[in-house]
Image (cartoon, rainbow, N blue to C red):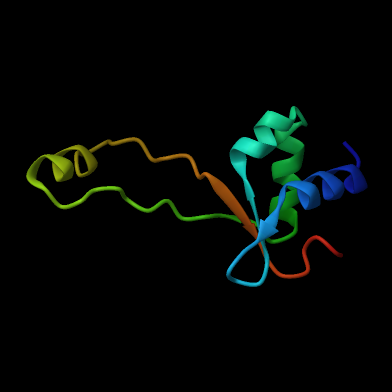
Length: 89
């Protein structure tokens, strides 16, 4: 994919983020059918980062058991945050 094609795609799928930048959902990128690797490389090259995944543990006895076990899988980020101005450069 060309740079301008990726910029147009991400601009179309992104929405404003509280940081002043933009946020785009991983699911939207995958559902679009574009080259996900190329789009992720483009996002990373412009300072985009994966949004931190917040633990859903509530603190109960059994909830902690599942989140705290050694070797637990890390979750895939759901969104990617781009800094302010990344879509206009």
